[in-house]
Image 1 (cartoon, rainbow, N blue to C red):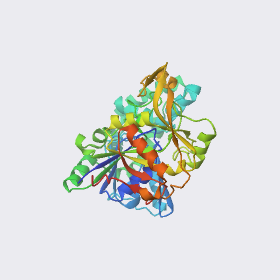
Image 2: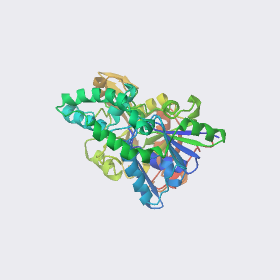
Image 3: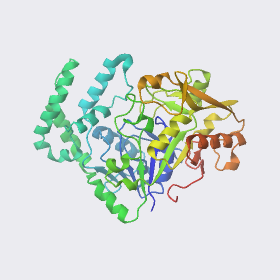
Image 4: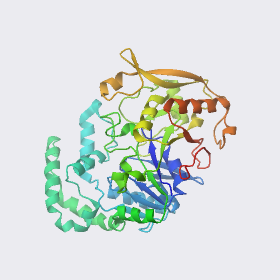
Length: 429
């Protein structure tokens, strides 16, 4: 059976939740393979809204849902999210939810450090969510992390805590903060441990078993390719690799397991937080896009910056992540515009280039080269077939395909699951 990997091909917030929900209803397992609870998916099912941060989207439909080792896990945020969904009638048990036992934990000291750094940076801040994701990944790479499996061995944790606290105490001293309260940290971990450990297991083994049974696996990415720590707009990026290649290392499967790579792409461009944004519109058009698209972050509530579709960035993302096909979302937000613009290249110091350069100074200096297209007067909202779309909307989609060198697999025309035009079924491709 085919597997499917879903990634964001812009700066995140592309509308992955709806697409993942639809795919999850047809999958046998859904796996999160990177990121933390800085990610956010909003699902609307039969009029009920579910907001997820850590839990894979399959949990709402009862599909086996797995948090892979590439995720950094805040156990307290997880407990709050699980309790909220149970309150909405969602069943969450060890039978349908598993956490990698080698998954690193986000601790309160990580949140402290994240927020202290952002506050001290002032205008130079990166724009993190302040939830400790970056510092947790730092400790993972620095071999200081407390992992899920450690929760079962808290009585022998002192050597690890020595390394962890030596590092954090020095950093905290630089911000005139007191040392880590080890006793409180241990007490907090002992309190949360039973809740987390009921779901903990070697998920690579669980995935091996379901693959042997011929299961369809959906790998669910968080954020977007342009926020990848290597390939994104560094340093204004997240702290993990968001590209499809992370499926293997972040969940414990082979590199050929990614299957059909579906890149989620918004019909315009948005970004939350700081960093370069070549097509950003700080005018009435940008405001109109934001208002019509309800552009506020699922996790932070922050207003997103809005701009025209950037084919240069999406083409780059598709190439880097091996995207098989894209799911174009929020087409209906563009209804009623007299003229639409698509960025087809950049001017950098008088030269036209067809990629986003790696250096932050160059990224900030590029100017978009636009191609204009006629807009459409009819509505695309709720369309479920090509025949339901105005002719100009179809032309817009086809032009995007040409410019990004990647075919459209589906078009989303509202937050509702069924309001989708399906061109290629990723599970059947």
